[in-house]
Length: 150
Image (cartoon, rainbow, N blue to C red; front, side, top):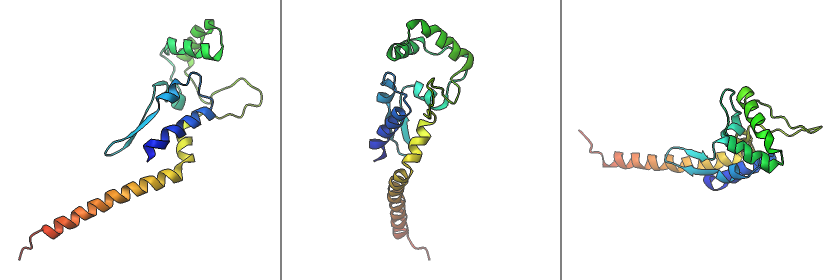
């Protein structure tokens, strides 16, 4: 079922894009199925990994503090990083300061869906085939039980 494997695929894409400073975001990913949709949940900053952060608001200082600690950056960098994010947002494309960098750190959700498109199509088709067949059977039962008016 999609809810069983999709979180692992999203985590794998985050690892490939090197979005794994503390691992909390990846650990938070979960997927559930309701009657009408699939819902993927995770920590709020996964949204910023996917879409970037608009300028204008101060990001969570404690999250930046944890990030610089994990990355081995001096704690004195927390405030300048926060102010830059407030001023400029986290624009796309992401930048890594290494020569010859070819890492694409954008659209972890879209890349995961594209990489698993065939598997998603098969599972969703199988699921909807059952739903449609059940609706068809119910319609036949209604017609069969319907009184014939003469």
